[in-house]
Structures are given as structure tokens and as C-alpha cells.
Amino acid sequence: MKTFHDCIPCLMRQTIQAVKQISDDEQLIERVLRSALFLASKMDYSKTPALIGREIHALIRKETINNDPYAEIKHKANEIALAIAPAIREEITTCDNPLQMAIRFAIAGNILDFALYNGWDDKRFQESLHSSRTKSIDKKQLDRLQAEIEKADNILILGDNAGETVFDRLLIEQIMPKQITYAVKGYPVINDALREDAIFAGIDKFAKIIDTGMDCAGTLLSMCSRVFLDIFYNADLVIAKGQANYETLCDSQRQVFFLTQIKCDVIAQDLNGNVGDWIIASTQ
Amino acid sequence: MKTFHDCIPCLMRQTIQAVKQISDDEQLIERVLRSALFLASKMDYSKTPALIGREIHALIRKETINNDPYAEIKHKANEIALAIAPAIREEITTCDNPLQMAIRFAIAGNILDFALYNGWDDKRFQESLHSSRTKSIDKKQLDRLQAEIEKADNILILGDNAGETVFDRLLIEQIMPKQITYAVKGYPVINDALREDAIFAGIDKFAKIIDTGMDCAGTLLSMCSRVFLDIFYNADLVIAKGQANYETLCDSQRQVFFLTQIKCDVIAQDLNGNVGDWIIASTQ
Image (tube, rainbow over all chains, first blue to last red; front, top):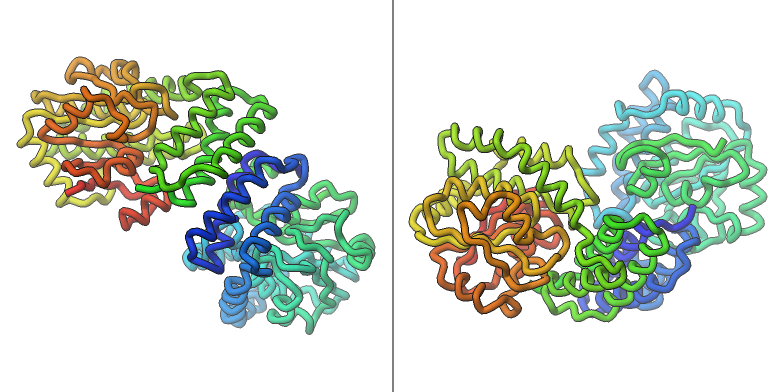
């Protein structure tokens, strides 16, 4: 997917918010914002938003001399998600269809996305959790994904945000026993999960953790490591979480199932839905 | 009020939306967006958002060779507001306190603001109208404004958007007979009302129409005409509609009553409210 014009103001907003994560120095925020505006004025918009965002976030890291501006908020998301995990597990395991309920919570957890919202929004998070039981979702796709999961021997899950990883672990618990690989980013980018976040969520007890080798949101196959690509193309089933994975893999040659919430008008238009919708989609 | 960093992405969004009003030429949209990003990277943010916006919108007009990109949407807003005016007038005149109900509808009409929302949103407009009867509003300020209106002999109303002018006319009808002056912008800027919009709403039948002399949202006193300033400082009461008037006049030395909806986080923070709140505020 190419970068839409509407993505640019959103990236400028992300820039301000990223610097605010680590500093309230107005002069620093202004300097980085000005640099990002200048950079955005001459970027190649035919690239995917993830690549454009990569350049912007590299600039932020360089100008703030901070390798991981979202470290604190990722930690907070991990802590909050882990604290509520036992109650959600109880709800999943005692319902009629635990796997489908775990899929629902895995989509609910995709709200833990601080790239798009300004800081922690507890109300929005609680609403998302609450919606897990009843939120309208494509039942055919849900049944289809359940069948694909049950049929597959080895499954690759492409993670998205820190904190969301805890919900992915609860899904993995329902998928077990299978050969599962869980992919995180190779380097810090926005609030995307790193290896340490997956381990914090306890995913290492159930799955092999790999990284994409990238410092870019989503999964840009042209930039991924050979090890990652080998697993990607040989998995029986690939489940990709979040918008950035959709943006980067929606044109993929292999089948990928996407679990995400729609968080902006650009993706809403592409998926023929509305902001706030919960999506199970697949490339084929 | 100075320009906050968060105003800049919002102005970039406005840029895209302004060009889309007159063209779906992706190359034109991209060229103007790039120019706006470059311009914003070197602007003086200590200026008020209205002045920063003025520079951006001047650039848009120049690059699109179009003096009034919002002409069509202003026309649409005028038509829609005028069509529902008889029903609203009926509701105002038959209620317990027609003046207070007219003030409520004047705030409801402030939703006709296409600078902040993308294109026409009928649902949002209908919701705003529906809220007029019950929306939470500072009752003390409402009573105070009513008393000030009843006490004043000559009143200046600073208009905001086209379409909203129709609601301002309904308010003026309840204020009559008084000496009323209604101020519009001197030149096209975003969807702000011009003399022709005030006349379309029939305001000329009840009030003297003047313009600020500016091509800038809000009312920047340092740029207004001498004729305007004379009326501004000598009116018994000044009622200013919309956020931009609040941004430019909140530090004014004379008393000004503001009627607006809160449409962004920056103003929400300044007014200690939330996006969506209806505000009656005054400088003193």
C-alpha cells in the first residue's frame, strides 16, 4: 500500500507525541517537528506508510538522542495487560468457544496502540475489552480462521504492539499444542513489541520468538531477514496483527490472515469499513 | 493565543482538505501539501494559529490559483441551514425562553465548520441540532449573557462560518429591536462567512453588516480596519462566534462573550473542557 496524503499529517502528529514521551522541552519538540516537516516535504510518497514512518522515527531517535522513545509507555502497556490477563483467561476458557473468544480478545488488545492515540487512554482500553464479547465481526471469516488454525501444524504470528503481546499469548494458549513462531521487530519502532515484550508476556513458554530484522512498523518483506522469510513462506498459516502489518502485507503472494482494529480513515477506505471496526481479513 | 505544536498537523490536514474541495488531482494535492510542509517547517509558532493558518491558506489559494476553495461547501452549508431555519424558528419562538434557546442553536450552528472536519457530515450536524434542547451548558453564563443582551443598546456579533450565519440570524431575531452590527471576513479564508453569506441568511434585514478587513480566521485586532475597530470598542456588547475568534480575542482588553463548540484538544486544554463541549465564556 502506498502512502496516502492523509498519512502525512498523522505522521507529524506522531512526531510530536513521540518526543513528548521522553521530554516536555518545548524547544526540543519544536526542533524535531520542524525537521520532520522539512523531511516530509521531500519524501517519496509512493513508498508504504511503514517506510515513510521509518524515516520519520529514525529522525526522531537521532534528534532526541534516544533509541526508544516509547520504552516507558510500552512498559506501562505490558504491566496493565499482564495484570488483567488472569481474568480474561478465565473468561476465555469458560466460554462456549474459547478459540473464537481468544481471537476476539486478540483484536481487542490491538487498541494498545499509542502511535495513533495520544498517550494512555484507559477508557478506550476498557471499552475495547468490554466489546470483546459482543463486537460485530465477520462471522464467516472468524469460522474460517478457526478452521485454518485447527488445520495448521505450524503457525506464524506477526505481533504488533507491546501490551498487545499479552493478548496474543492468551490466543496462543488456545492454539496449543502446535508449532508456533511469534515475530517481533528487530529494533525499536514506535510502540511495536520487541523480543523483551514477548518474553514479558510469557510467549517464550509456548512459542519460538524471532524478529523480522527490521526497524520498521509492519512487515516489509524486502527488508526482512532471510531467517524470517524462510519461516514466513513455510508456515502453514500466517496471522498478522495490526494496521501496519495490513499495510505492508495486503499485497503479499502468500495467504495472510489479518486481525486488526481500523484506526484511521485511510485503512477504513481500503477495507471498505469504518474507523473502530474490528477486522478479520485475508489476502486470499 | 500562540500556536501550539499540535496545531501544525491539523493545519497540514486542512491543507489537503482545502485542495480536495476544488480538485481530485492527486499531483496538485501532493504539490500543495509539500509546499505547506516546507512552509510550516520554518514558520514563527509564537504567532496565533489564525495568523499561521492565514499564511497556509494564502499558499493554498496561490498554488491552486483559486481565490476561494471553500466556495461550494459554503454554498451548501448556507442552503442546508436556510432550509431548516423555519422549523428551528418555530421551536425557538414557542419555547419558554426563546432568547436562551436561540443562543443554544447559535452554538449548535457552530458545528458547520469544515476546516476541522473532512467534508460534510450530516450525522454530526443533525446530532448538534438535536443537542440544542438539552446539551449541558454553563447556566450561569447563559443567564449572564441573556442579561447583558437585554441591557445592551448596541451589539456587535462576530460571525464565524457560512451556514452558521443562518443560526446567527435566528439569534438576532430574538435580540431585536436593538442596534446590531454583524461582522464577516473581508476576504475568503477557509469557510468563514463573507458579506454574501450574511446577506444570503437575511441578516441585512436586521443588522448592519461590516467586514473585519482581514483575510484571516478569527479577529486579529492589529489587522482589522479602523472602521471595524471603532465599532468593536464602542459596542455595548460583543458576541464572538467560534474557536478562531476565541483564539484571537481571548486576551482582549474589552469584554467579549464567546459562543463556540470545542473542536480540538488545544482549545479543550485552554478552556479546561473536552472536545465536543459547548462553551459560553467571556474575557472578564
